[in-house]
Amino acid sequence: MNIAVLSGGVGGARFVRGLVDAVDPSGVTVIGNVGDDLEVLGLHVSPDLDSILYALAGLNDEERGWGRAGETWNALESVADLGGEAWFKLGDRDLGLHLVRTQWLREGEPLSAVTRRLAGALGVEGTVLPATDDRLRTFVQTDAGELSFQDWFVRRGHRDEVTAVRFEGAETARPAPGVLEALGAADLIVIAPSNPFVSIGPVLAVQGIRDAITNRRVPSVAVSPLIAGRAVKGPADRMLSRLAGGTTPLQVTDCYKGLIDALVYDEADGEVDLGAVRPIVTRTLMSDADARRRLAEAALEAAAALR
Ligand code: FO1
Image (cartoon, rainbow, N blue to C red; front, side, top):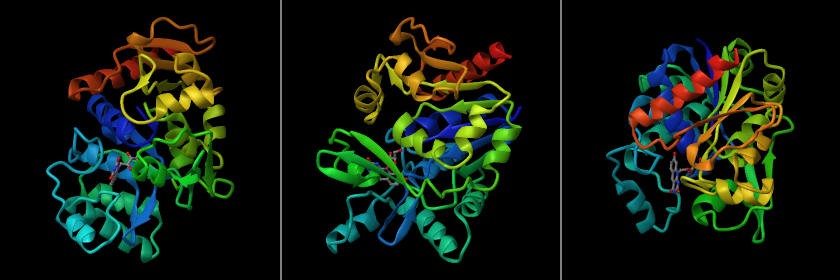
């Protein structure tokens, strides 16, 4: 079965790991957000693609949700001692990947080709694609002014209320090679439990991706990132409150108008009428490998019931 998954970082990566544990990974294509990408210490970092790669390779730090397990921070300490930029924490092991990626990008390889090489070297089964090879960056509007995504998210600890989101470069960003093909060949489209505004939003902003999903002939299922109206981690709940008017499954559904046929959400959110979208109520906390796989299976069962 071919499955195309739209995913952000931490929550999306955990879900994708559960999915490849539930199905043949060779049919899974993950289309990852690049709106969070940044240049730090002269290196190109793609946090969401890396969270996905590390999770699929079994190298991720389970607790933090980003970066590698067994990490050490010697290089970063040295950077800080020298008065360099140390607010964005790049571990020693993680740095190796950023060095290699940056070199290959500077040699002219597109991000999709670089990601394919990294995935191969890490032994990742399944395909990981950036939504676009073109430059696309998320900016958030706050009372403190407009901030780049990581400035807001990491440097300022996402404490500023977001009143609007902007995807710089979205007008001209084209889908990376393989993205529209994966959506066209999919038997099922899944939107991972990621932030609808800043993780899935940038993917949908790339020319042709939203249309490809709107015009689908196969089931499309989203998994809510909220449990009892709260984000497990991150600012998704505050953003839904402010930008969508609430944090129930109905507001999550509204973020994906015309794009989904079913929403998988947590039993703690109760019974909600989602109109034409089928509600699938289950436990969604991805506390361990079993829970991750079960959540992926719930999405697969939801899709099977729609056929
Ligand atoms: N998140 C943080 O909260 N603080 C960090 O210092 C940080 C560093 C970092 C380094 C590499 C990487 O791949 C991810 C990293 N993240 C960090 C996570 C990341 O910035 C966010 O979780 C995502 O961008 C949101 O999806």
